[in-house]
Length: 221
Image (cartoon, rainbow, N blue to C red; front, side, top):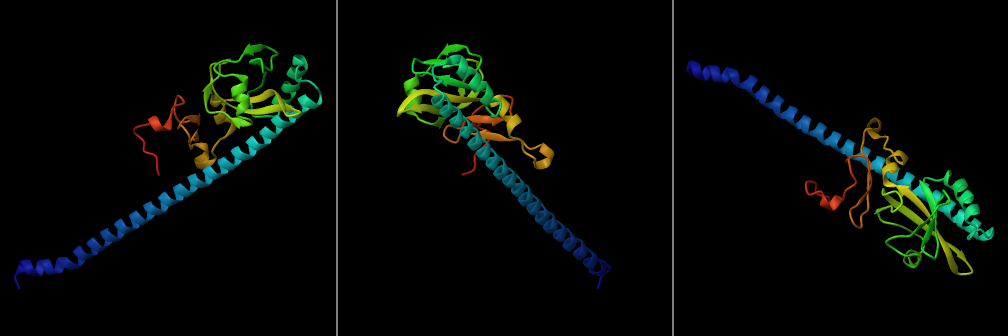
């Protein structure tokens, strides 16, 4: 056997060891990467479930408070007593996540917690009342100019809707209400209206946008 052949023969075992070690390292790296990816997804999924449950519970509690306030207005005969209602709402609002609670009347006026009355714009009492108890899509608040959502509860007596009690939440304030604990609180939290893609809560981007308009990001099925 030539010297070159003997050299190759002697080099084969270490070469094989190097190749096997490299293959095992790549396989181990891929396994660790897959495991870490699954762990990250599980962490995010568990955090999302936790925040979802928190949102659901807190909204149920706050809707119950709105309904109690609406019933109290009827029981105490205060629907048309603006000064009394203002005090009534100020007492209830501190117990809620709402930035303010408005009362909308059939004459298309809104009673604010400050006692000020302003005109309803863009829609009518009849239009809103026809929806019954409901949560709005994201909209621009005609009073503050901020992006808000609201939850509306009819004030009903003898089958007649006398007013609408409306809890208003500023979308800008929502990140203070619902925070993620994952990754030491460094995870971003967004709430998107699935019907139109509007961001209702977003502590990731500078402005509230629309998921469907984010061409650089593809949504999963």
